[in-house]
Image (cartoon, rainbow, N blue to C red):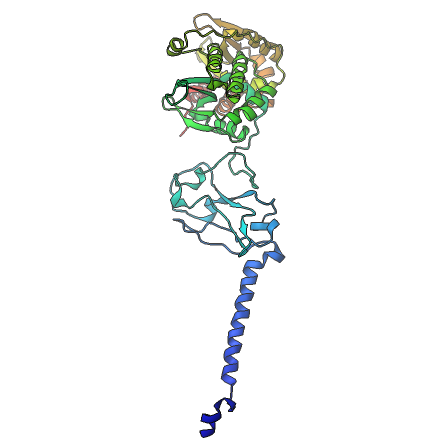
Length: 459
């Protein structure tokens, strides 16, 4: 005992228990290091990540891939540095997120920023579009931002813009509007604000066509629901979008109606705004003079405020030819009509059935309508002097079968008008088989007719 007290640190003891203790410590370090390396550094060899995290959402797990540390392979994608990448998440496959609402698309957008990292310590960041609790709209599927960015993904909406550019110009010729708004604003230097706007308004049944237009133009602008009509309005007001997208398109794919002159004036106003001339008295007067010749001209109040206005000369658009048939398809989507007429006639059932294709337009575009007739090779012009309008009509059944049907089979319509055309074809097939001469066939045709054009309803 004395030896241990005096020289205890020189005394030898059995250390087996300490050996196992230290082996256990080092083994746990090796084990957990191996697991961490496999989970988080596995992508160094397999170029993919393994872990999914549960986010603090109200529903089940959203798959968030843990990024590996290879900069050109962050988040499992080969991508350029500092670009935003997007992964689509199928809500139906991933399970219930707690929402019972209906939505058009089944997909959710998830974004993360490639190249967003720190050197000390070396970490990576990944970013979702905010948690569900922070969303203004609670359904992730409604959070789509269609603005064109550097996204590395394919669109989940069935809205990929397969619209022909000539079709778009034809549709805008029929339903579009290039407008200039001048309104009072006290905090402005001269008390007036000037805004240029491109817009198109379609019935609410054509909401998908409106969205396709927005996609076609690169996601710019916004879609609003009309407060007065059962319709949606797609409009673009941002100056850079008007200059780089809208004006560029219609310069390349020109309008053919008298609306082309409104577009020319619209382009001049946008250029004046770009040059900041709308902030001067002379510039404002130029814009007022241009607006006086556009669309419906100046309002009564504007005429009083700018009493010395002088409308610029408006020229008549004389279209020499229709360069692309897709323009006719787009124009038909806006102004065309496929109708079924049932009238009393000398048949066994006492009624006759006829088909008619028509396009209505203001009489100032008479020459353009004549060009359409020449292009199609059929049709007649009817004039309505009370409404100052004209109507191109194709009623001859042989022309409908041999010309109109083949034309729209080749140059497709889009939206509700396409559905009307398909029903129109159903009636034509029934007439070809002689079903319109029977009571049962006539009832079928009446039912189809009742659901066409203004009778078509969507749930």
